[in-house]
Image 1 (tube, rainbow, N blue to C red):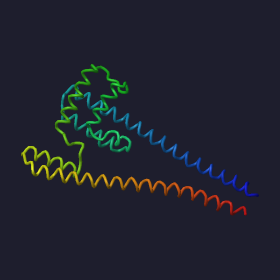
Image 2: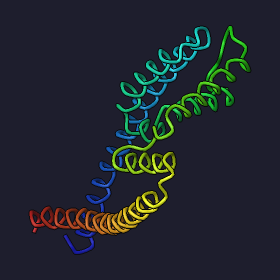
Image 3: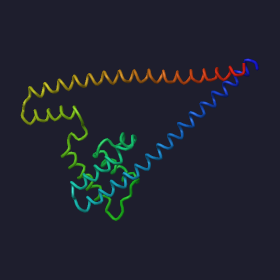
Image 4: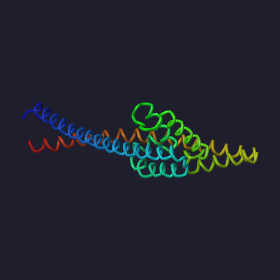
Length: 209
């Protein structure tokens, strides 16, 4: 075989390997999307059931309890859902948006009245959980600021705000460094794939020399 035959053979092998990788990625995406859609549908049904009960009973504690179950047992179990629904307030907002978009049908109940009840529930939930979206150290800092406002301790409040500013600056620098490292790792990974294919072709070709 001449050099052009070897090159042609190498290209065929490269295309074959690339096709297998693309097929695997495509099947993986299809599987993940199917799981996401199934869990989203399950979550929508559970949320709708909880809100239907609240519409009739106005039992706030029971409704929040059921919504927390949906959040913990369904939403947090799927990466895509977890990124879309970061907290219960977002769950309620998206529920109303889905109704307006015709994605969720409300039967045997006046839709406008139902949305008004959900809206009032959202307002009550936000008023009772102002820092619900914030977790960990950030929650503690913001709570301290609220306490300073309540006690009118301006000096302590300024000190906490300055500490928060330093933390945010550190976090910003850390995120920028992580982004740089991520781009570098992606480039290395791509180079590794190319080199693996090249060396694989070279190893395969050696059997015919």
